[in-house]
Image (tube, rainbow, N blue to C red; front, side):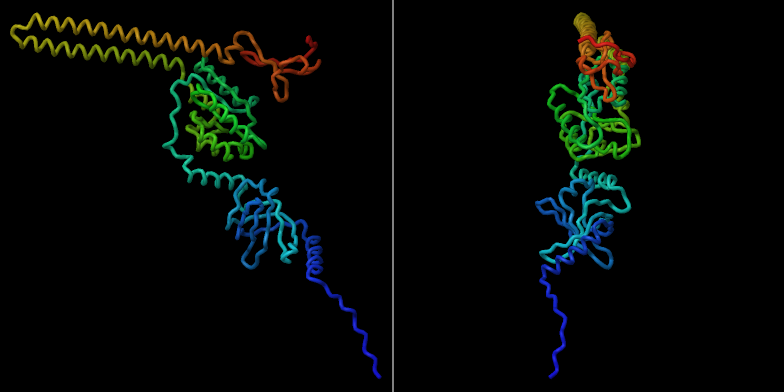
Length: 404
């Protein structure tokens, strides 16, 4: 009798066992990969995670971008965008499907920041935030100016110097904010809202000096754009150099090419204003004189044409002359009073100006490198270097002794 051949023992796997083996092999082999493809079937549920399909002409793969990674993306993901991404392959065991878990995304062919800029610009344009009809005029002679910028940059000193040179007694309120880096946009938006809490600010300057697209990015954030749009105070955007454009420039009531230019736009030259006032007064006075001379000549012609109204006509002429003299005197008194009021208000504003305080012999001590104002001797040590801001120029000093 022939004995049966020994057959190899069969290894029978469950679906879960097989899926687990595949998962282990795939995730071990493809834990650090870069891919490119076109986005399709984009979905963002309430969880905040982003689900999508990456595809090319021949194949496709499912992908997921968890909320913790998605919040770092500057631009908006949309169907049809071609991207380059980094991630790792995982297997979703309940469905037995493999997918790529993405942690980094960048658009192909254009920088992420530039794409984010164009997307937000298009979005806000469609909402009407750039509409020229809603932009308000800047006051001719503001009594109080709000400035939102870095307290340590060159921009604030440039603006203060220009304003002081053109009209030294304008009242200025400064809210210092970071102008670049994480959270700068939120701080700028808060400062705009805080400025709107003051009832007597006539115009607001928001800006900073030049820099790269990354440096200026706080002024491209949506929260800043909407704060400028919602401001009841007219806003001048003064960001970077003349060639730099930000979202804030498009939303603001007026765009200044530089912070110094913003200061020149917001404050007229005092000498020019006084000359204009004098010129207008001369024109008004000459116009009134010409008008009365014309009427007087016409009346005299009518008198000559009449036979016996001489007495009555002479009375009318006398009344006209009297009214002319009184009107001219009233105008002179009104303009003199206006000049005195302007001078008085100018004096009050000058007394409140930060530069006026420095001109009386006071100074501000600041500690490098962040230039924090020193209020207590305990904030410095012997040998520390400090910067003392005077009305004209700065002093660099070293502490030799402290006197509490």
